[in-house]
Image (cartoon, rainbow, N blue to C red; front, top):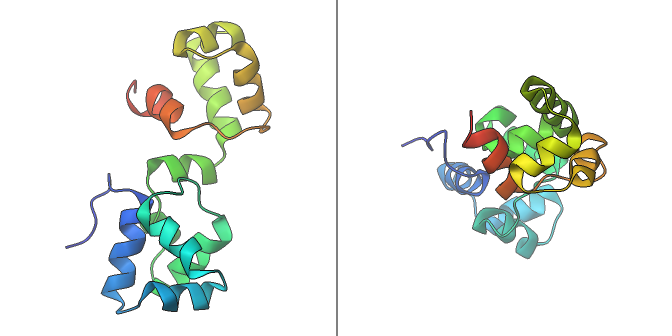
Amino acid sequence: MLPASNETTADKLRYYRIKCGLLQKDMAEMLKIDRSTYARYESGASTGYPINVIKKCAEIFGVGTEKLLDGYNRFIFEGQVEQVKRKRLESGLGQDAFGRLYGVSGNTVRRWENGEVRMSRRFWEKIFNMYK
């Protein structure tokens, strides 16, 4: 059965690897990374995935990158900066007020909007996933 759209990127990587009859060792060799690194991708220990790795996995599995990405990783790959700014502007709030609404400082919001730091999955769920 295909992975559900709400499954994590880790779940999707595991599903497609097994579907293709590959071992983690095989994937690591094809990706030119250490097997333990690939194992972390599948275990969920890594929440952020390098886009070049996702693109290569999609190529190996014969699927589009969108099939491998969960909502959070799609948010990161599609441009956190623009999405955070858009969400804040749609709310009609300044950076400080927006930050207070979600329990972070205005400086953190500024850093998200400048692309200086990646928004954590926890805050992405709070801001984008749970309050749509």
